[in-house]
Each structure stands twice: as C-alpha cells, then as structure tokens.
Image 1 (tube, one colour):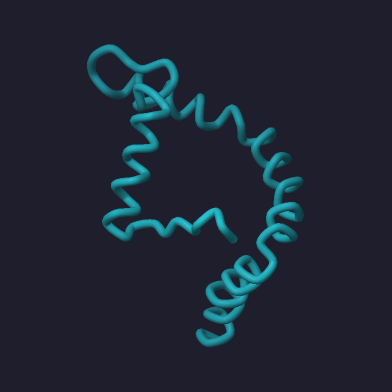
Image 2 (cartoon, helix red, strand yellow):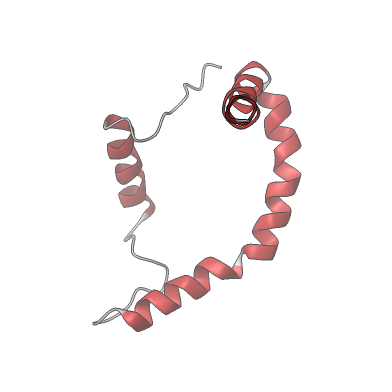
Length: 90
C-alpha cells in the first residue's frame, strides 16, 4: 500500500505535471478558481483572527508589507531548497 501511495501521490502527479505542464495547468485552473471562490473569505477571516489574538496593531491585508517582501521570502525559501522553482523556458 505504501508503494501504491508513493506512486499515485508522489511520482505520477509530478511526472504528468512535468511532461504535460500546459494541459495540467489548464485542467487545474477551473477547479482552483472554484475552490478559491468558495474558500476565499477564509484567509481574510484567519488574518482577522490572528490580528485579534496577537498584541498590538494588526495588519489589514496580512503580515506582509508588500508583494516585494513576499517575493523575497519565496526567493529565500528557494535558495534554502525548501521549495523548487521550475524555469520558465519549459
């Protein structure tokens, strides 16, 4: 069962995604938009909850000051191999 799970959850999606990136992205776009619309208010609620729990003045749009700051954190995560970025050359 572990081998089957590894293949179905770990290897197959990554292989399909790398071999057919445009097709997989287009197929996933619809469900992702639907889930985002349904769960969209959840992050805003969690930000409000976090602001209520933590002392001091809260942040209306979350803890990041700007998109640039968020991108810098993503770059740091990539540099430390926490995440993997695929080149745009495809």
